[in-house]
Image 1 (cartoon, rainbow over the protein chains, first blue to last red):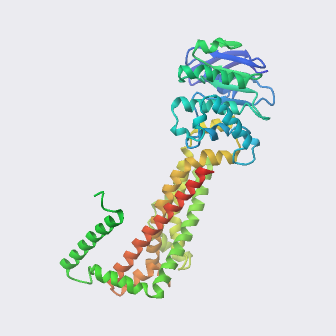
Image 2 (cartoon, each protein chain N blue to C red):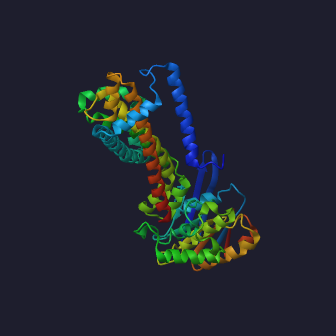
Image 3 (tube, rainbow over the protein chains, first blue to last red):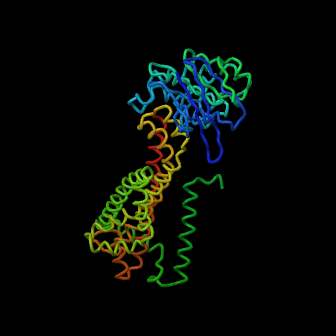
Length: 202
Length: 251
């Protein structure tokens, strides 16, 4: 169980988190809501180990592995949707620099479920913003699957900027692949927070 | 203009420039100062029939390519290391600055003390190209998106994968630019070194001799040869890079 206790984080003089505590459940969907600039993304970065808190403790059980969908897509622009999505299937344990067949198969499946079956071989830089966003989501979800799949997925406004018709479909796919695991998701949209098991509101 | 094939266009433009050269020759009227293009081309063909001509070209090419290749390999290595290790960067960057600021001629003359005549052009080329490749690879690595590296860290990506998929695409355009600039630089610096140190064979030696014996026609002939080889070298290099880049894409 991930436990955050009494955490504070400052950038210069600006405190973004002050004595913040929260116990995350073992599994389920936790929606993190609140106005922008209040420290939601900072909390995610702390959980991912990308930043260190100024004060307080962060207890993450040994062996907890993370997957993530960042606020920006952070994709490899020259590579195809399929390559981008498949790259984290095995992470560090993949000895070869090339991608595994299973990883590609899984990436193909998830990309298709997200409505990108026509664009598997398209380089990311040629995709529209919404499509690139879905590739980024697919990458995060592929990392949740397989024998080495991550146990926790952290998503920063995953469906922001998607067309209304894609939003529900995308959310359904996200839920499907995060079932039985922990999904921590920042959202500005109260509608997206509705189906969550817990709402962490700043 | 569209109807004219590319090759024909090049020939027409070349012919105009040669005509301008001929006009200058006629105005000057002294073969010793500006030889006629016709005589120069005849001279090139005469020279091309001799073994010494090809020996000179082969020797120069070999020297320049060795120096160039060493500089590309070491420049890429040092560029990578200095971009990653701050201490080595501060330690080595003054060296790069000094090498960049030193005139080629100073190097060549200084090298007389340490190196054999035959090796000086190789070392000169190496010293000229090294900082260019070094600086560009360094820039490429420094320009790598930190957000992508962060992502790689979160997903616990292997070092080899990070190198191939994040660093290489980022460095490649910088590296390609350095390699292209470097070959022109290598060629000119190598021949300049040969002119000064006068090894037994080499294009520079031939240039030097034509100066000593006031063979202006030879001087022009060799210069034309240098320009032609320089263009061919760059073409070959660009093809090679494009081919390598294309294969990487398919992998």
